[in-house]
Amino acid sequence: MKIKKAIIPAAGLGTRVLPASKSVPKEMLPLVDKPAIQYIVEEAVNAGIEEILVITNRNKTVMEDHFDRSPELEQKLAEAGKLDKLQIVLDVANMANITYMRQKETKGLGHAVLIAKAFVGNEPFAVLYGDDVIIGEKPAIGQLCDAYDKFGLGVAGIKQVPEGDIYKYSSFAVEPLQDRTFKITNMIEKPQTPQEVLSLYSILGRCVLPPEIFDILEETPIGAGGELQLTDAMRTLTQRRGMVGVDYEGKRYDMGSKLGIMKAAVETALIHEEIGADFRAYLKCLAQTL
Ligand code: UTP
Image (tube, rainbow, N blue to C red; front, side, top):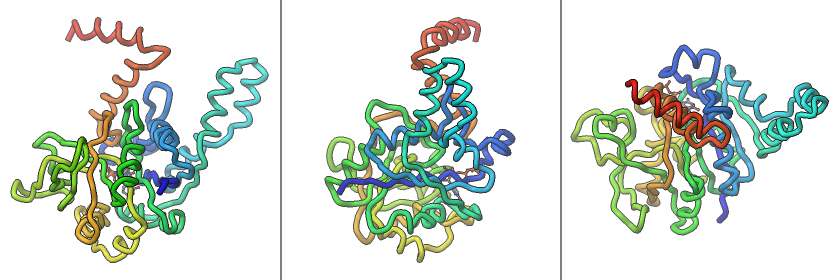
């Protein structure tokens, strides 16, 4: 079944990137000339997603403005004959069919997904975490949608994380199926001890879920950090129906962390059409002084 709908949860508080995130949502931090969330919307559109719901909160209306028309700016650009710039502005506004819903209280990623229940209805859907930018040739979420098609089971985008970092993430027990695809047998959110670590595979930024996840979320107790955890609901889904993991092709950047933001900024600048070559030359010079 073709996946047509996607949710982008982007209502987190972004406490790891304060003070910037006090007034600028981390999803709006620029990577050269595009805010992070635009990369994510482009990924969804390139994977054939037709409708996107962004979960926001009261401090994040700037995201809505970004994907809206801007008549005054458009008029000025048209009058000045800056038609290439006008096209850039129009392309963003016409990029996708995006709607927004507010999460009134920051009760966790599971809660953010749950409030999308009416939007999703009774069909499988994609989730693209608003602070995870993935750069690659094939859209990462498209690779997960293909796996959903093939196996008819919920799919988590998984990657191995460094040993010392697994305690900040979720940890998955997996068995290889084929190529980059795994059968998921168990999972835990933020393991506390080495005994609780199931493997270094963690869900990173993307999943495709069947609609029954909503019923499961409704009966899932509050988990790690006092939040309703999507991982806890996915564990129940794994036990009831099974799930697969796809170690997707593409590099993932964590826009919720300071180091992740800087890595994403440097690497997107290096491949940028307009400034890539100049930035590479600059960086090489700078590196010699380090
Ligand atoms: P994170 O836990 O990485 O985001 O959630 P956070 O809460 O903003 O992080 P801190 O404060 O720096 O620790 C993963 C994704 O889920 C969204 C976030 O916006 C992020 O994209 N999220 C999280 C919500 O939409 N609502 C929530 O209640 C929590």
